[in-house]
Image (cartoon, rainbow, N blue to C red; front, top):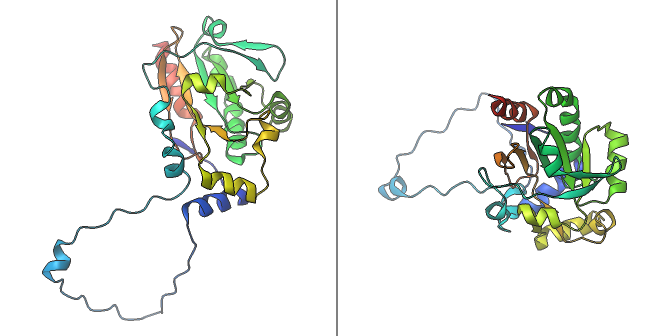
Length: 244
């Protein structure tokens, strides 16, 4: 299950541009008789049907190989310590001593899909707390931008800054922007280096993991299409499984 996140004008334009998509309207004349069916020739009957062309950002991002590199279910979750935008540091090892961890990557303050996802997680935070689970969000953006999201979106869970992408590399979620994506970001005057402390050519896969107290990944949401995210309902269900 994925979160159906409303799109913004910017992201729609980017998606359409990257996929070569166009929007067309088709008029149908009222009461027009349907054309008579024509018998298919033998050649037509045996011709293979071409698969539908995939659209959206998914295929482009998948072409970087990030889905193959990303940590999967059953893998050990690499330990890490990162600066927390709420102040201080967050240690995965220390947090797992208290209970499971729900760990999600997001692209940055500028991404409307990320803002919607984090708000949805915040709305269900009390349920995660009741299950003893710690919710953590990681981005390559610097702590100032994460702090801005905390204020704007009312986020109360951990917001971590992986500005050097060291943790993203450990989890295999970092990917280099394909040339087409770089061109689109330039067109919309989005300079990632201003958000990410100098790292302007890479983004994280918007992956989400549920990690048990032994440090093993028990659930992994991996989709190259950044418009699709793990739903709070599914994540809560996965955390409950760990309690049985």
